[in-house]
Length: 220
Image (cartoon, rainbow, N blue to C red; front, top):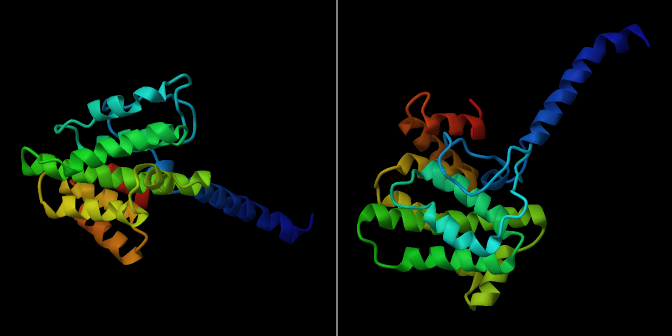
């Protein structure tokens, strides 16, 4: 080995480590990056490494009921995001479960709400799940939304979750900053993503759960 090669070796190793770290953090952010929730109740999961740590034997026939039970009006947005991330991963194994879950959340979003906070949350949940399905489809090379549209006889163009999340943000109820964070992870418009990220960051208390999730997703 030449002197030059020996001198470069540590730097090459560092570069390789950086590339591997970037690869580990790659992937659709709504799916591939678990959210920190401080152990809020969620769907069954394991401690296995990686983002797809599903529990073997979980019966997806109960996915809709289990998910809805975890999306009550008092549940914070960050906890809702992690529950719907897990729900999407489970739903990707069953077209029937995927269709049933999205149908339920869309129905809730369209139903008259008791108060503005509940209305905002149901709009957020439906929009977030739509965009989660879209990002899961990027991973699996499927199209969960197209399958849903065919089964329910609705135009695929109407399944635009980002718009629903923007509607929820515009209602200006509680937890808007976390909704801004969610929007930053779903839009493909870089300027819009940065605008949402900046709004979420400005409203997040340093060291808070939201601040920690923003740092994990976007970096310091």
